[in-house]
Amino acid sequence: MKVAHTLSLAALALGMASSAHAAVPAGTTGKVVVPLTLNFVTDPITTFSGSLSSIRCTLTLTSDDALGKSDTLTVAAKVSGKSATCDITMAYLWHVLNKNSHMTIGYTVAATGVTNTGVLTATRVASGTLDKIVLPANGATTTYKAIGLTL
Image 1 (cartoon, one colour):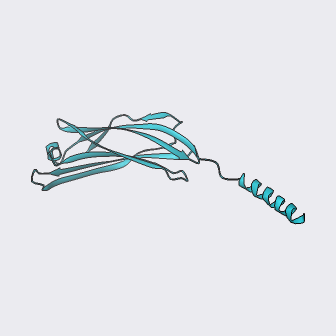
Image 2 (cartoon, helix red, strand yellow; image 1 turned 180 degrees about the vertical axis):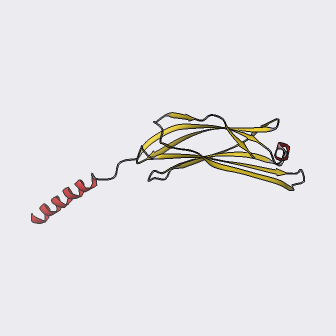
Image 3 (tube, helix red, strand yellow; image 1 turned 60 degrees about the vertical axis):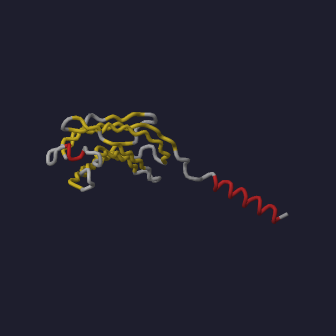
């Protein structure tokens, strides 16, 4: 009987301890919209708009939450005249422990010029951080005005 009573107390203690687990991660969703306008000064845009060349823009979202969330999206630029644009819209769904965590919004633009025979002629890279904000409300869209970059 004494053993059964001791086991009952141990089970009760374990049950109480298990109710003290860390909070369940909360889901937060949203979108980030970043329009980039690219102007080419050193080399003309035709250097980067051939059939083997490319201009690509990457949007990166990272969180300082304990769960370490991040997302990345890369899109091809649209060339028009002497400039190019990247209109990036990225949706995210993060499970975070702290809804007051921060989101850092960054970008990278990579332009590679390659001749029709496969010879690399030029490369340009630009990158930076646009913002560091408290995680937006669930379902929010964070939109930035056009950001001009010179390559």
